[in-house]
Picture 1 (cartoon, rainbow, N blue to C red):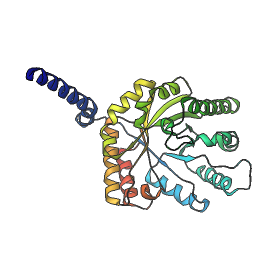
Picture 2 (picture 1 turned 30 degrees about the vertical axis):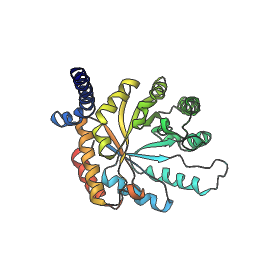
Picture 3 (picture 1 turned 60 degrees about the vertical axis):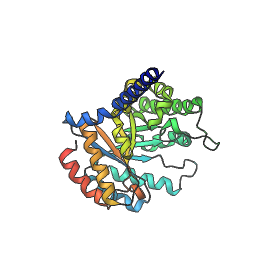
Picture 4 (picture 1 turned 90 degrees about the vertical axis):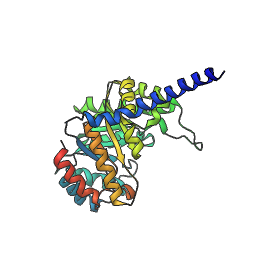
Length: 293
């Protein structure tokens, strides 16, 4: 009896050790055989006030940011609304720079997309088709959307952007991003991969454990989708500037060693995540000078 229990215990422990090895070992192996590639750095930017846009863009350009991701902000039913003016001023100002622009389209924004593309589509490089679709909540407390409730707006967004590209000889690429929770809803990743218009997928990383499990989760995402992957959200919510700077710079070092071609940070102006005016802004400028594409 004791031998039988011991045997099962050894088998169970072996399975646990193998699971931990498969999940965490690639993180440490990455530093042994690092990639030598350069990495493009992007950032989320909230268009808070048209007054600050010019100064913010100039600061991002000096740091070395290459991609700016913004929310879809417009009010088609009220053309004089201040939201439209903020977006208008933003796109006027980016014409002085060589940034690539990504626009995040949420489920509630789908009806606005035609208007947005009509006015600013020629200045957009990427459209994000929903945000972490596997985690979008419905009306019930804690309830996630059903698959069809996700798939319908995805089809609508892809159809609208594709129609715009065809009609205007446009070249907007589409993508979406996932959290580690996609491992529990892999069919959603596979659904996106059915569309050739989806050119790449993003993976969102937070906390140390998120960095350490990145190789395991990224491999799963690439195998499920057959798409190239990048880091589409990376940051830490803290007012401790030293902690924030250390976390982000060490994460960038790992992502570069791992071989990612792009990493987009949270946020340029986002309260606890904020980069602007912090020690991280200075450190990021130095990092990009040495490692940025």
